Image 1 (cartoon, rainbow, N blue to C red):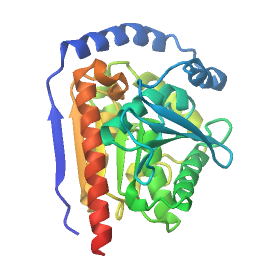
Image 2: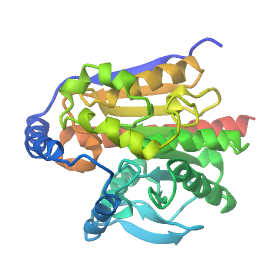
Image 3: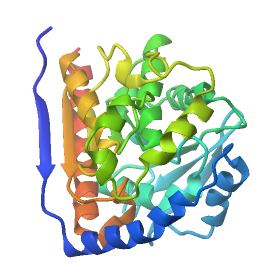
Image 4: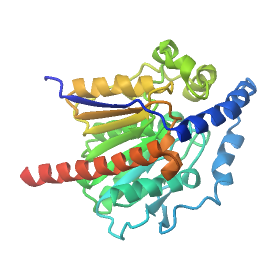
Length: 325
């Protein structure tokens, strides 16, 4: 199979707002990260982040409705201007390093993404470590996809998406769906995803020194603890190592200076080589998952607009393909 074209878009210019924000975050977070004590992960403290964000409100005009699934929760998020129709949706998996964040921390960003796409999102509060194992987190995400299909939503009307660890879960869920014989969604979107649990390539990448929040020193111990006895080179552990043939069109977006850019770059190349139409968009000088800043940064707003455009195009292409079949 000849590789399909890989579309790469690079945004080299950095606004003064983004520069100021990155400098401020680095000044606060870098010393804090260096003070993180060595030893086991404090799961209780990690879980408290979503509780602390419970007062966060989505943009005015948003609507939110809680959903109970089998053993975990999700919520419908209709961004401003998005109607009640739920026949076409974004299935969203939040980031947080597989141990933190949730519906509260991500509600505002997901509302912006929903508004940009013009369709609602189902945000999934999958169970996390230590309640379930690392591998079982993706099973909750797969269960949420199954639930949508059981509700009558057509697979070609779903775009799976997530940020950071949620970007990992996006690809892991699509691979599990393929393994179980489920139809693929219309597309996959990963924002600043971590897709390779083996740290060799990231450690050798120039961004290991350039990353705005100096993440690399913590990753070795963190990944070793969350994986346990799992082999990071196993394709079922690292999506970047998997056979990617048959996955739907994919869109990856990241900061060109973050350490996880390495994963997006390599994954985009491997997806295209596997025959998957792929778009990679990189933004210079941005923070990890910079879309969280909504309209406060011009880069974030532009990336969210692109996200919405890509969702609409992916759903349109999938529908035409289904009708032509």
